[in-house]
Amino acid sequence: MAGPYPELFHGAWFLALLQGLLAALWSQVLRQPYWWLPIHALFLPTAIALLSLQLPSWLYLLAVMLLGLVFWGTVKGDVPLFLSSSAVADAVALIVEREKAATFADLGAGVGSVAVPLGGQNPLLLVDAWEQAPLPWLITRWRCTKLLNVRVKRASLWSCNLGRYDVVFAFLSPLVMKQLGEKIIHEMRSGSLFISSSFPVPDWEPESIVEINDRRKTRLFCYRLQ
Image (cartoon, rainbow, N blue to C red; front, side):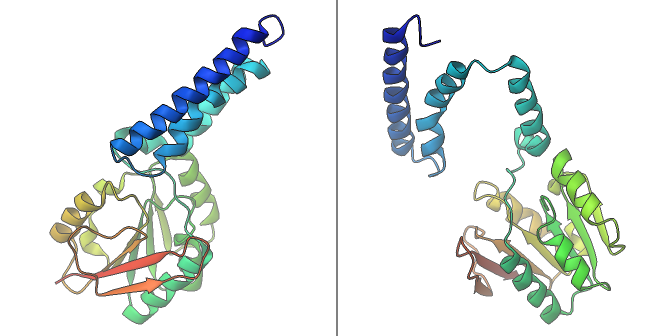
């Protein structure tokens, strides 16, 4: 692509980098979440780099299909895939044991980073893993083949009735925490516990905050329902 038109190609690179820089600066002005900065800055340069490789068109279709299977629910208002660390799963297991919980829900379970080890360690605990995206759901379903106490549900977390659970865990997004808080107030029983990984519920005072010594320095915000 660059061979016959080197000056045009180099000019396109300059414009792409300039556009990315301006887009990133504008996202700062609009106070968008920090993760939008690299997306704005790198989108157009990445597109030009891929065009220069002259890859077969079916590869792009395959990439779109895989992304759709992983991030299926985002177009309908759900959140992207976030993976919890093993340290988070261990901390949640300790909380569940302390609560003497009989039922547990993982909202947006992903590939089962929390639901699978928790179900394996606690055979008497009923675990419901809610995941809408097809590929993460399929992976979690496969991982739970021998865990009879774990039910993997392919459905949106918003369709889940939280009233049946002693402990509910979520690792979602700050954009949905206010809405999720309203759902929790209306559905969860008095005395039950909600655990949010990384993102607090706005204007709520947590009963406790658990500091996790993992790569993200995760914090678990624990809320007791009154």
